[in-house]
Length: 503
Image 1 (tube, rainbow, N blue to C red):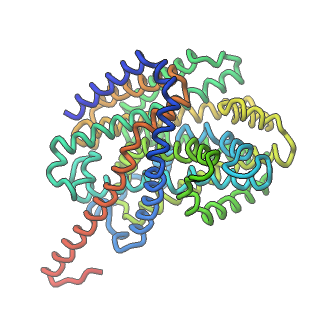
Image 2: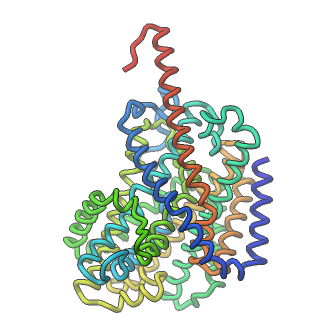
Image 3: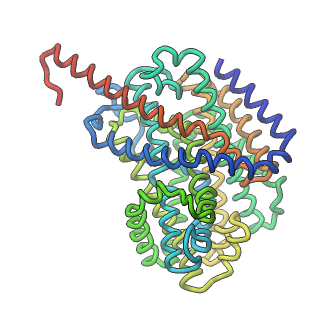
C-alpha cells in the first residue's frame, strides 16, 4: 500500500515537474515568500524545541534507557557509528558551503556593515548556528523516537511508529500510512536537493581543473554517474557499502582539513573555532528566536538563510533520523543524544573554522578582495577559488570533487535504504529491488530540480513541502515523551510486583 501510493505520487510529481518546469521556476519566489511569512515561526520554534527536548532526555531519568533490550550491545563500533551518522546527516552541503557561506555572511551580514571585524564574527557565529545543534536535534529526536519504538517496543521501522502512544493500532491503518507516504515524499525531495548541490559542485570543479563546460548537461551526466555508483553500493548492504564509504569519507575529509590547517593560518583557525563556539553558545537563544519583524532587510536575510536551512534539515530529518536509528541499536538514550548532537556539531565547527575562517582571513587580513568577488558572483566556485591560494590546488580540487562524489553516493545509498525501509512495512533489511526503485525516483527528482532552475528553485520547493512537517515534529516530540513516561510507569509496576526498587 505505502510503496504503491508513494511511487504513484512520486511519478506524478516527476511528470508535473517536467511538464511545468518553466512555471515552477517562475513561481518559486512566490512560494518561498508565502511560506516564510506564514510558517517561518514554526521552523524556528521546531528547531529550538527539539534541542531542548533532546538535552532534557539525555540528562533526565530516561537517559539510561537502552535503545533495544537491556542486554543488547551496539551493532557498530563507535568510530564507524559516528562516521555513518555524520556522512548521512551533512554530506554534500558541508563541502558546497565550506567557504561560500562564511564569506557570504562576512560580506553581507544580517545586520550592520559587511567586510568588517564585526561581520566576520557574525559570519562564523551564524554559520555555526546553521550547522550546529538545530539540525542534529531534528535528526536526533526522530532517530531517538524510531530507535526506541523499533528496538525497545518491537514496532515496525516506519516513521508512523513514533506516533504509537497517540494513535495505538491506527498506525497500521490509513492514518499511519498517510504519515509514512507524506514523509517518504518529503525525504525524496530533500535528497534530490542534496544531489543537485553535489552535481553543481563536481561540475564546477571539473570546469576549473579540466576545462569541461559547466552546463546543465554536465550536471545531469554527473547525476547519472553518481546514481549508478550509489545503486551499486546499495545492493552490497548496510554493513559493507555504507559503512566502508562513510569511513573512507571521514578519512578523506580529515586529510583535506589537515592540509588546509597545515598550510593555512593555524593559530587564526584555532582562535576562530574558540571565539565562534563561544559566540554561538552565548547567542544561541537570540538566534533561535530572531524573526526581525521591524526590519525587512534582516527578515529577508533570515528567510533566505536560517529558515531555508531549517526547511532543508526538516526535509532530511526523517530519512537521516531513521538511518541513525537503524545503526544505533544497543546505545543508551544519553549516549545516543550526546553523540548525535555534540560530536557532529563540533566536527562541523572545526570544518567551517578551517575553510570559512581561513577564507575570511584571506579577504579581511590579507586584503584579497578577488576571492570575495568570486563568492559574490557564484557560490559554486567558492571552494575551488579558495583552494587556488594553497599548494597543489589542482590535486586538492580533485580531492574535493572526490569527497563530494563519495558524500553523494553515501547519502543516496542511505537515503534509498531508508525510503525502501519505510515503504516495505518497516523491514530493517529491505529488498534490493525496492532500494533500486527509489534510486530511480531520486535520480528523476534531482534531474528536474537541476533543469528547473537549480538551487533557488530547490530552495522554494523544499520550504513549500516541509511546512506541515514542522508541526508534525512537535506532535512527535509529545508522542515520544508520552511513550517514555508510560514505559517508566510500567517498569515501576513490574518491579513493585517483584518486590524490587527502581534505581
